[in-house]
Image (cartoon, rainbow, N blue to C red):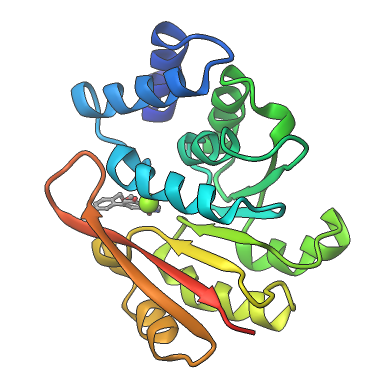
Length: 214
Ligand SMILES: COCc1ccccc1-c1cc(O)c2[nH]cnc(=O)c2c1
Ligand SMILES: [Mg+2]
């Protein structure tokens, strides 16, 4: 049967990237998306902003919502201090299977805990399953309608501390208006918008960085 786009992306990584070299994996995926098939990775323009925020925060505890094929997982994991792991949640088993192989091809499997399931179910399990007290950095890149309920879940589960940084993709396209209103109006967050474009296109999009004030 016909392969899927994530499977074709994995093939492109195995063909064009160097095993154990995260930078070459990132480049191979970006090349595939620019010249073969568009795919919903955060991409190189927004990815550079993601890199700068991760580097600034230098987190010890990291959560990613929405693994997809592992592109942003690789971008984040390559920047983490030795011994630091990131937890990434993916709802779609087929995507998770591809992501696992792309993360391993980059040589970052020891820095990543990939969990299959829905964020709504898994967020309340973070403390008991992974011994997390609070997250230093959270990247929201899953389903736009889950951004607001999930940030409220983080608060209710006591997973945020003074200074926790949340970075949200796609706040313009596809758009998360209710989430934006919440973080920009709430006195408990200091929010900042980083303008960019929808991955591999000229369509406006951007990242919203929100710091929890406690
Ligand atoms: C399936 O829609 C793909 C699409 C189509 C048009 C515009 C934007 C998107 C898009 C872009 C992204 O970075 C995304 N990131 C995470 N979860 C998404 O659903 C998502 C969707
Ligand atoms: Mg996205």
